[in-house]
Length: 235
Length: 224
Image (cartoon, rainbow over all chains, first blue to last red; front, side, top):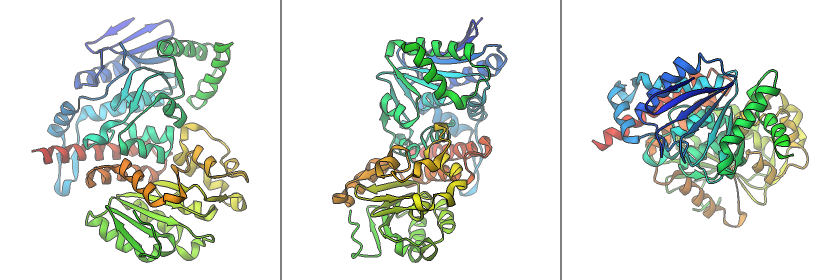
């Protein structure tokens, strides 16, 4: 089964569900793509019988993040501020986006992000919502939000603390610089770096290994699954 | 940037306040005033005492409460000897820097902290690194490099050029960031520290969303 919207599609192949960001080259997180992601996630992914989910971007990049001007316009037109800059409400889509990313983290089936090229801003937030994160050599990773006056706003700050630890996460968010895949793996943001061409096939192999061999999946055991799979994969 | 102790108890330079841990309880009210007046973006506290008695100097819970209320970057600079008392205070800060000649001796009090260690370490090191036995990290062979590798220390800096290295580090980290932006980011991170990672995720993420939307509103207001 394949459910295709304008900028994203969800495809079931055997036991694996693929969420593919389909707006190359950058797979930018425009308001259309975010709304379609929320739609496809709530209406199809959550109801699917697949045993694992792989998230990837069509083309060279995972995602180059949000369209900042569009994001600002959308937030500002729907945010209500009270006295002393106290925030009374913020946009519904923004909450739904956060809830969808947060829900991915809590899924009981494996969720793997197959990352290549740019994976920045809200693109990185989506990757971080996955339980297992694999990136290809040469990937560009980071939260540039700080460089244009913002901070990550869709679960990125919390997920970066959970994966890298408080101090390292704060550095990543504050300085807004990009890091290499090797730094990503060393800090815990990613689990594995593969060759650029092998990223998706590695993730598919790992997913099939988990589905076939793990009786009770737990995302806490992600690094053990990778170790076991690598042992087989490399021998 | 000078961190010369003899120069002054409180050094204010380039939007950064620097104080020595031995003077901390007397100076924190001055710092708060400067924060409220948007004069500083970061507070650096220098831990240079060989023997640090936390009860006499400052209660760690009081310090924790104070730092959590501070919407600016808090940095602990660890020099000389790092024992558990030092570490107990230092982990309350957002960032920890250590000079390359600092000596680590954590073994003495490890049993005292073992039960409290997990939640704090999950936050500092990363919950998803799934380190089950934190006390083993504090074994006799622990040194600065080990603390850096596990993520307890953010950076090891040269003892010969401490002032310059801190200045470079803070410039790289904070750059030309607006004080409101720093306040928002630190408030968000401190909220996570306050509630801990075992708190309901929706409650934690509420803070991120709040700070994000408030910043967008502020940026757009400034532009218009």
